[in-house]
Amino acid sequence: MSPSIRSKDIALAKLGRYAGVIPAIAGLWVRQSEAAVDAALRKLLGEEFHARLARVPLKLGTAGVDPFGLDPEWAKYAIWSIASLHRHYFRSDVHGIEQVPPGRVLLVANHSGQIPIDGALISAAMFMDTEPPRIVRAMIEKWAQSLPFVSTFFSRVGQVVGVPENARRLLEQDEALLVFPEGVQGISKTFDHRYQLTDFGLGFMRLAIETNTPIVPVAVIGGEEQYVSLGNVRSLARLFGMPAFPLIPQLFIPGGQLPLPTKYRLYFGKPMAFEGDADDDDAVIEAKVWRVKSTIEDMLARGLKERTHVFW
Image (cartoon, rainbow, N blue to C red):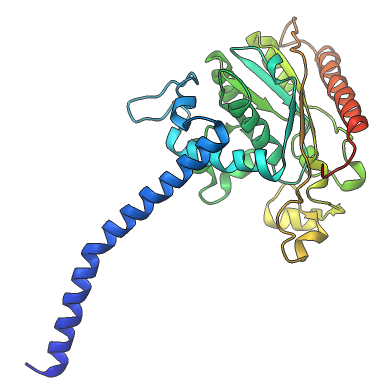
């Protein structure tokens, strides 16, 4: 046997031994990572994640996921991430969350921040700061489903595509549903229009009336300053198939890609009940929507007046 062939055999044998070790190392790494996440969640939540999750009314199938794809194991890592942001990075103050009624409810909030951190923090508050804890379902934009891996991730952590059929099914199952009636226009506001609400869509009100669901207005303060947008480059938005392409100078500064650590303040208002016909003319529905929008505007005005600083 030639020396070169013998060397190859020895190398292959070594690789074979290493290959047998790799799964064990990977398994150990996964177990250590899970233990670290569990310890961090226990510190953040004051108890084990699964103990808290056990008090959430979930309808899981035989595959361990709910009808919309929510997987508690995926949700654990998502909650760990947003809980850390909620408690430590944005240091959220939560007011009035005890007013959220049990059972089906529509959380209707102002939208801001260029990326939907506001929705994540509302969800964190509903899981961490209420008893019993709740998992909030948020309606995501249809365009987000076109992004690689995003559709699977969102479904595994409990978020659903924002179509009426999904929203109706969730409320019929007595879920807490989070909606942002301003849509993309709200999240992509420029800095000079911060905390100025754009037009609300009417769909959430028709849904609330049809399903006899109370509406809880939510005012979010802090998101408008996390990314300072100076404009929206519509041509680039069309080019990349995005709803908006904000011009954010801080993204060009080292470390500026992270949102600024503004202090978030979340205000939950009293539940609002609406009666009537879900198929009423737009003018009738608009009057009801105006009441919700005006309530959120008042909550924002009071919160901004009480705020002493953007960062603390």
